[in-house]
Amino acid sequence: MKDLYRVLIVDDEPLIRQGIKHYLDWEKSGFEIVGEASNGQEALALIPQCQPHIMLTDMVMPIMDGEVLTKEMKQHYPNIQVVILSSFGEYDYVRSAFHHGAIDYILKPKLNAKDLHDVLCKAVQHIPKVLKCEETYQKVVSSKSTQIEKVIDGYSSKEDIEQLCKLFTYPYFCLIGVVSQNESGNINKVECAERILEPFYQQHEDQVRYAWIKEDQYTSIAIVNLNDLELYERLKNVCKVAAQISFIMTSCFEQLQQLRRIYMEEWKALIQLPFYFSEKSLICTEDAPCTKKEEPFNLDWFTDEWKNGHYDLAFQYLRQYSYGLVQSAHLSVNEFRSFFNHIFFTVTILLSNHGYERSMLEKVKFSYVSKVSAALSAHEVIDYMERFIEEMNDTVTQVSVKGNEDSIQQVIEYISTHYHEPISLNVVAETFHFNASYLSAQFSHRMKVGFNEYVNRIRIEHACKQLTEGKRPISEIGGVVGYSDHSYFCKVFKKLKGVSPSYYRRQQKKDQLRELG
Image 1 (cartoon, rainbow, N blue to C red):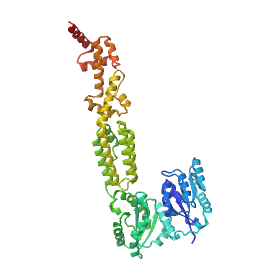
Image 2: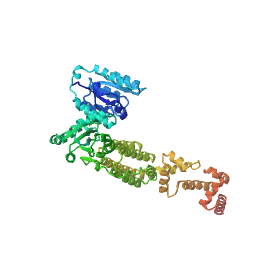
Image 3: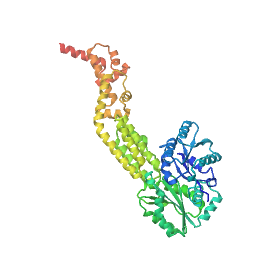
Image 4: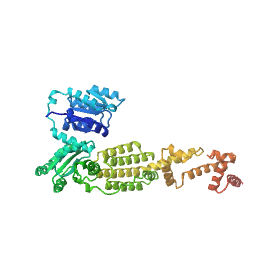
């Protein structure tokens, strides 16, 4: 039996990885795909398990890019041959990768079967002879897994189905898998699952067949072929008593042609559920919640409540909505985490706009974003949300009383100095880096009068002094205290003083004469 050269594919775009997998008849060409990773960090974690001869890697990836990955590979695994998957305009990246030991590159936009085969053959020439003679997985196992993946991905032929039917001769099928939510929880998850299931397989070895198909860093899937439905229930019972591992299991189906539909409709929905129901060791199709999707989060309302200082109402709404998300379990894990990270960003930005210390808020924000990104369950995320709310409430309580008083006092002093200028709420809010709605609410709460009315009062008091002194004509006084429209000045003056400016001046002169007489 001919040994196969093991290939690891590293690219952050799933479609690219899928495309590469179906460019070649890998076994016929002498190769097998032993793993996939979406960034360099994942790839390094997979190497001890996959032991690849060749690595195909993209250059521009999150967390760890292809340049750093190539450097790390050549330092720790010098015999693994690196081939770069490059896009146009990435010459500097490719050049640096060659510097670190890559042997060739392929332009992704021009990728085709012949070029891929040629570059793989070139890589083989650089593999030390001792590695070329290593034992690989049995060809029949690899062939079986590859054919199953082709059925799932929708690339299978009639011949693939026929060959699988010869391997899986029992009447019932199901998909079973293991899921972990981060890298640390992923180590040897397949081995752990196999240890749990092995006694069952041994006990029923003449009635059960199965094959594991590695999907990605966090999830592995197996197809199980059963002789009767009672075995399906027994298998479920075995999984229910497992510890420190989450199994997911589809319903039974009777034809391999149904495999892709079961995978797309059931498996894709089930794979998110261990994150929401982390206390369960087995989640089946019947465990999926039937709750309809939540209404979209009303971010505009939430933001307005914050701007108006109604923090308790805003947080109460956030809590109710968040617990609804957990119960409905309809968001993907990434969508669920992103929702809370967006909330953390929004709240800290709003507080920054309200005058709270930006550097402190940035530190808090990134702390919680990091925690949520590493959380292993939805309930853990909810706990972080509660802590965030508590911390923000403490911040508002401790800072707002003194901070708001100091800020409003600064606004009052600003008005006293600039009352004669074209002053407005928006101008003052921008000057002191406030949201205008928030400033209006806080100013009214502190001064027991609205912003514009307060400005009018200050201006009219200064107008009264000018009228009493009697040095300026009344027609000029309105402009001196900040009114560009004389008739509007007279209107405001009469509203606040009950008399016109001219009458007020006459009364002041009479009072002065009376005092002198």
